[in-house]
Length: 266
Image 1 (tube, one colour):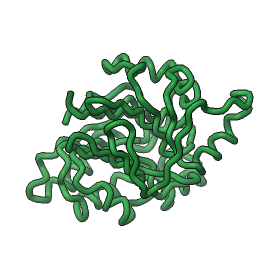
Image 2 (cartoon, one colour; image 1 turned 120 degrees about the vertical axis):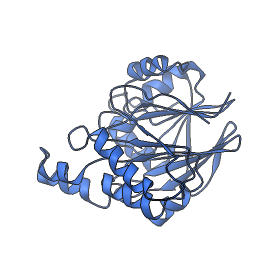
Image 3 (cartoon, rainbow, N blue to C red; image 1 turned 120 degrees about the horizontal axis):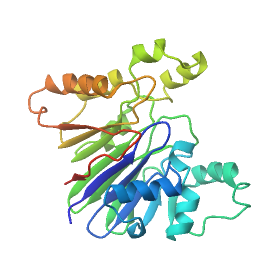
């Protein structure tokens, strides 16, 4: 079996991705309900009961909504930072009558660890949560990057996404659509801040100036339904990549909110 990545859905209503090696299957974030996660996995041809772990990037509800029920139902461990766990636990303990996760594993940004045969490198990202991280995965000689929910591209993120064979990265909003769109001004300021969300233009600048072009697949993720459009995001990325020799072979995929993306095999 090849190393694969399947985006079950990505956006403000829920985010969840499955990373698989020959022997290990990891659910990265669980932003949908347990029932919806199981449905989407089955729709994508994946067996939920074969999952080995849930890996959490940060505590916002669109990334953790189904964590507790999924972990209990599937009897698998949940991996998150200590700070993320404490923040998440304060928000859900009443809902689950004080019941704790049966299997909790904590990690620190900047320190690699293994889940089965998959090496996981968590790294700090700029977002308005307590201890947010992106992930770089290595398995069977393949390197994957998953990084969403970041206000800008700092040097450490650029470093950790280098040499990825597949890179899933945020392309959240079109600047003009956001500025003229329906969000209250306070929300617009949050999205535009350095701890908000990455715009199409900011991602395009990274692609044009700092991206190493290693990925055979680029997945644009966490697209805003109110302030973006898939073809606008794609066009910005393609223009940034197309101006550099050797990068036009990258295949650009769009992760959507309402349905799984076709599985990427590497």
